[in-house]
Image (cartoon, rainbow, N blue to C red; front, side, top):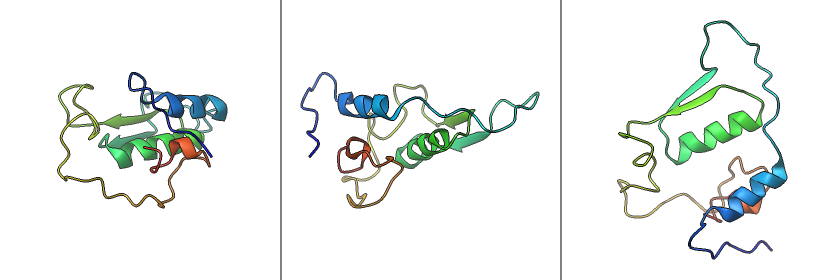
Length: 109
């Protein structure tokens, strides 16, 4: 059983610890090409965009960028700003790119 983080000052501590155990991102297997800034650009920095960016990097695809319509990084993502729905409706049993780590699952968040 994985204990949830109860430290209000550091709510992402369990996720950071899980990422430390997973290890660094794998080496980029996409061939470098001159003039190419991004191999993948994801539009939208919410739950899905962030999960996809994570999964792509863990799959060895480098130069993954996430862009968001927010004015700056402080207002980006639904976790720091008002979402358009009252409740997060993601099923807690949904499989996500958490690499088998319970601390990175939807249920943990």
